[in-house]
Every structure is written in C-alpha cells, then in structure tokens.
Length: 312
Image 1: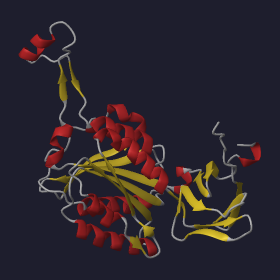
Image 2 (image 1 turned 180 degrees about the vertical axis):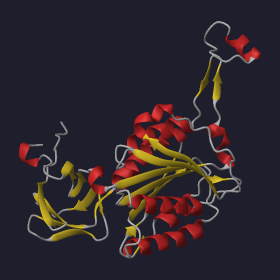
Image 3 (image 1 turned 60 degrees about the vertical axis):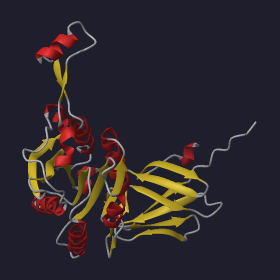
Image 4 (image 1 turned 180 degrees about the horizontal axis):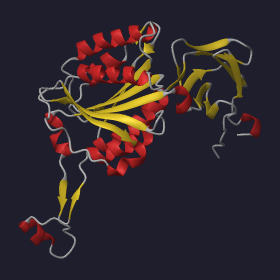
C-alpha cells in the first residue's frame, strides 16, 4: 500500500478487494462512554464446564499413587474461567471505566441472576468463576436483559452513553418470544430517548444450541435502531472469548449514523441509526476514494490498490 493510501484521520485500517471495502474506525471509549457487561449461562447443562479438575501429575514419579490417595498436585481451572478472564481483560479496554458488570444468568429455576460484581479488567487474574450457587433448571434470557437495562439506567448518571452486553449460552432459550417482545420495547425506548443506545451479543456454545432460534431473535430490525442483536455459534468453549472480541469490534457503535460517498459524490451507503466500528460497502469500478460524513463532518480516505499476483 503506498503512502497516500494508508489509513488517515478517523480510520485505523482499510482493506479493498474486488470492489468491496472494509474500513475500521478508530474508537475512543472515553469519548463514547461505553458500559459493558458479561452474562454467563448458569443453567445445569453447564455444570461440567464449571468443574475444576485435579492435576495428579501422572507424568511425574508417584502420579498414580497421588491419584489413589486423592493428593493432587494442583487444581486446574475450569473451562469457563480462562474464557471469562480473557473476555474481561479485553472488553475492559473498551469500557468507559475499565470495569464490567459480570453475572451468571439462568440460575435457580432458570430465571434468577447471580451478580458476581463490578470487575476490573486490570485485576482479571484474581477472579475465579466457579459457577453459580444455584444452577438453573431452565434457560430464561429475558431476566438477564432486564438486569442489564436496569444497570445501564443507573450508569447513565455516571457518564454511560451507550451499552453493550454479552450473553453466553449452551442451550435452547425457554423464552425466545418474550426476549423478542422485550427487545422491541428496548428499541422503542432508545428511539424516544429514555434509554441510551445498547447492543446485545449472543454467543451460543456447543451442539445444544438452536441456531434457528438465535437467528430469529438476532435478525430482527427495529425502526430507528436497526439490529439490536448479533450472534455466532462457537463449536467449542475455547473459541468463545475470541469470537466475542470479533463480534464486539464489528458491532461497536461509534456514532449515531453516517453516510458514505464515492469519489464522485454519489451516496453508496447510509447508516441510519448507528455507525458501527467496522464499515463494509461496495464501490463502483475505478473509484479511488470514499468520504464518510458523520455528525456534520466529512472524512475522505483513499482506497488501497488491490494487489495482483502473477500465476507463473
């Protein structure tokens, strides 16, 4: 990429291929006032993932004897803990004060929330995630949504201007219709100004997830808001944290909306309700630059030339 085609101004990365442009915007959480939260599935089907394992060091002398006597060398982390620690550390860099609300959901009869606390990303290694005190019999998501909305309302007075909540689940939702109905109310509240802009990230984990159900919840568009939800499926729990990071980056709102123009001044993309951190749009053949108009300001960026490789 030549010098004049490097990202400038508000862009941190530009990629173009076959007329498709992907432009990543710089994001300053201290300006945007983003307040994040992580909600971890506490239903009974997660019990194995929360189980700590004992390390008897079989590859060292006396390993079998230690197993017989129950004298473990160490206790290994459960499968959930390192994933939540990784997410907390990463997402805290985007949060306005570096602290996230972290809670278990789908506890008790499936509707209870067990709040772990306001956790600081810089102290991530000191936190343990052994699972809820009472694992849930079912999986109800609406109570977790209500908990986050109540939380973000209290944070508005402290400087929160937008919110993003991550929900991790390994099963089928028992209240999908209620979630859709509540999401509709949230969207209306955003439009009328009684709630700040919020986004929800739903990550399903493993074979027990109903992807069709998640798509029904997440693909709904709301007037004046667009999509509230985004989702992905992780085949293994070890993929969850990285997947969450990608989804948050792609769906982060950095402004209320914006318009993209080609180098002839023609509109090629309109973001009505929210401007995500990653912009994706098509440009006409021969287009050498694009301009993003946001909040009354215009930012022009040269489009990098595509690399051509010889077959021989």
